[in-house]
Image (cartoon, rainbow, N blue to C red):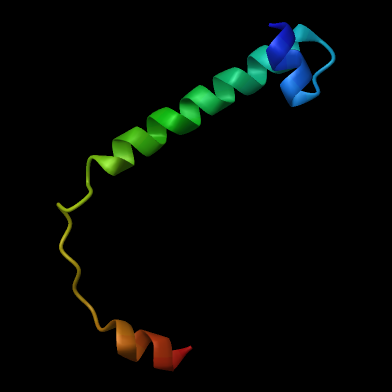
Length: 53
């Protein structure tokens, strides 16, 4: 807990715990998204999209 408080610059322990939980949720969402890697088919023209901007 001391390391987390110091690393995050948190004062109350509650802030450190809440930030840890937010990080855990973000990592789980990223894990779910990574399951799609290589499984989605791209349909489009990147070159045309670049020129349209």
